[in-house]
Image (cartoon, rainbow, N blue to C red; front, side, top):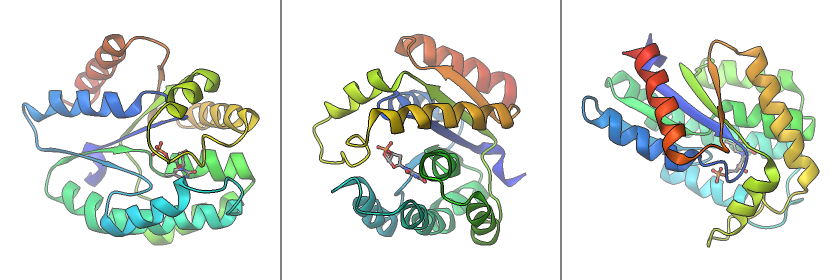
Length: 207
Ligand code: TMP
């Protein structure tokens, strides 16, 4: 199974995904070849698209154009980075993937789910992660953390709290519908507890 070393990390802004991806990479790297990547982004070209998405006015894209930009970036990323590395036997740890599009654009901005499903099928052959860790956190706390970051990628952070609450509920609903694949992490726990939960889960499930 090509996706058996493909793990994604999902959740709202400031939920601590990036920190935990690095910790997991360090642990796995002792025995395996591992890469970290992210969406939107992960290739030179997809990072250019990322810039269009994460900077500037919150209302500059419609939900559908936003979804299509993310899918364009994803197609490039899957073809150039994710699939070649999985075929090479490497572990691919990805900060966000298709669940983000379902949460942020389908649930969050009412984009037609069928369009996204069909495009996923035809563009990336329905590639799904083996395991997804969903970092669940009160968006008030998460936004507080991520607004403090010193970069100008604040387009999503500038969206309303009610939008971010909708995203949290969307993720929980997606998790309920994908119980086998998605493991919910209480992102309000401390860093060490979270990394232990993730590590013991990975060992149990995959090794
Ligand atoms: P992040 O990589 O810093 O978490 O930020 C990327 C932002 O892009 C985040 O707010 C979620 C959003 N996003 C979507 O809206 N749809 C998508 O398909 C992806 C991958 C991300």
